[in-house]
Length: 188
Image 1 (cartoon, rainbow, N blue to C red):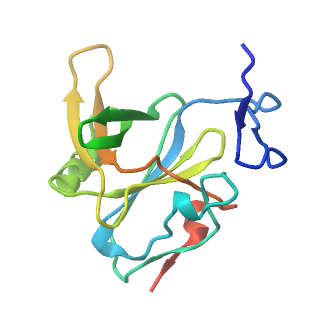
Image 2: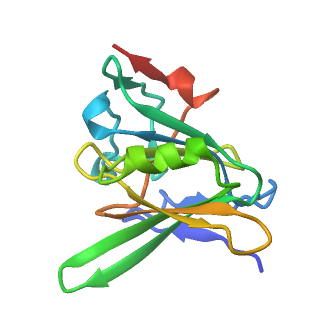
């Protein structure tokens, strides 16, 4: 099914067409994820929908600045083992965007048990790159993801199922960077 989205503006000559990406492959899943404690962040680029005249929902290629001795976790994934979803929900209090990261980490092993212990009761800003090469920043210095780990050794394979959830006030913006994510992070 073909889909073309149009955004009509007050002046009809200024009609924006959204490229549906039919000329590109669309691969699902995430390839890498960074978890950063908000207290470790000195500068985190932010997005303001009301100041964006482009309609791209992109944060310009601005560096993230971390404090010295920051705690950052980098996770890389096998194909189809990590995914992200964002669901718009509305209630009497307004609109929220339920953002969920789901990760399957193969094999029960010591370093994942260590990670499970380290991230307990803490919230994280998450940065991911998907399998199409797009990067998004999830969370803010004030609101971050909290993760739960479930170890499962009952079936054919043993693994950890990791779920992170955040109810955000806006959709997660894209981060317009080139190269590696680490090339766009500066440490004081």
